[in-house]
Amino acid sequence: MESSTASFVASPASMESRTGIAWYCYAVLFGATSIVIGVLWDISWHQTIGRDTFWTSAHLAIYLGGVLGGMSCGWLVLKTTFKGSVEERAASVRFWGFRGPLGAWLCIWGAIAMVTSAPLDNWWHNAYGLDVRILSPPHTVLALGMYAIALGALLLVLARQNNAAIQEQKTGSGLFIYVGGILLVMVATFLTEYSFPNRQHTALFYQVSCGLYPSILAAVGRAAKLRWPATLSAAIYLLIVSVMIWILPLFSATPKLAPIYNPVDHMVPPPFPLLLIVPALAIDLLIRWIKPAEGWRGWFKDWLLALLTGTAFFGVFLAVQWHFAKFILSPAANNWFFAGGRYWSYGARPGAWQNNFWENESWLNNPVTIKGLALALVLAILSARLGLGRGRWMAKVRR
Image (tube, rainbow, N blue to C red; front, side, top):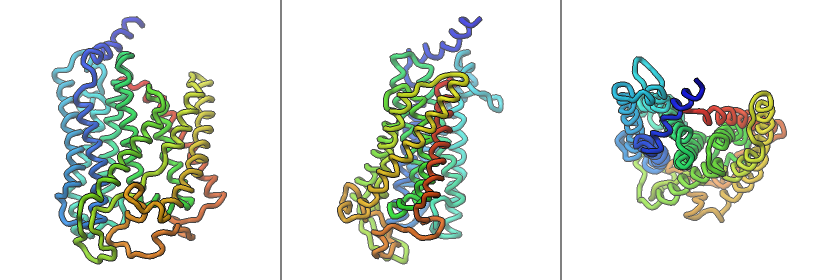
């Protein structure tokens, strides 16, 4: 019975070994990439021009990614339901009588959320003007949809990695690592207001960073089949944001909404990305050192690894980002490569505050204290433990 069951479960792997990575995986990956590029472009548009119309190129890039992911996965669900083989139907999830991979369902839900948020966002801006914060109610719905698209892509390529023959695992694993980088870009973008270079000497910045990034890096590091997966995902995040920093200012643009305190004449770039690649390297080294186990030993090893990886992320990230933030605020970073001092919107009144750290007693700019750093350390350990648990589950995804 066990041998027959094993051969039945392995049959999708033999099918994939003949066909390679399915086209809809690449379509969803392209859609997720279009989304993150569109989001960074849209933020730059708001900072440079203002909101002149809903039908901006940046908005079209965002919604193209959602529609592409939703339609390709909708096709996959219909094909699996009505014309899928026995193996394909067995390796699917049933919902309302339809069948499809779990990742496809997530992408479909994400596309619906994104399309639903579009008219709501348009109404919100017409009623209330520009957003004061990135995560307005319509943007929250949009963000949930975008995360669903990225997570759906993650699960689709995970199934290919885990079901593929040995010689083809590298392709699936490489795509999985790439989606990990996309997720880092999404999370970092929606945390922009908490992670401005001027806020990188506050306790809240390190608490938020330690509470979120270790989870993604540890999950990728545990589930991927290639070497240095967390480091590669962090490198992809670094590359995507850096390319947008270098490309956006090449295009001329002028503000169209008053008041204009900073008369920019080009697209405003985002701030330079966080140096997550350094603590990601530490996480990869620790995961390679402590191998996973089952039973109570697995439970003990996961908590030990979480303690080490969380502490390593906290210590390395604090040391690296603390000093790098000083550099970004210095005149030495005011160039095309680092874009220091060039990420201010047209509505920012020029002043000395732009080159200073914002540290006061407010909750957003609270100064670093021993108590605040201790909380950041605890959050990093818990985040790493959550990521390791997710990674263990991801390594077993088959549908």
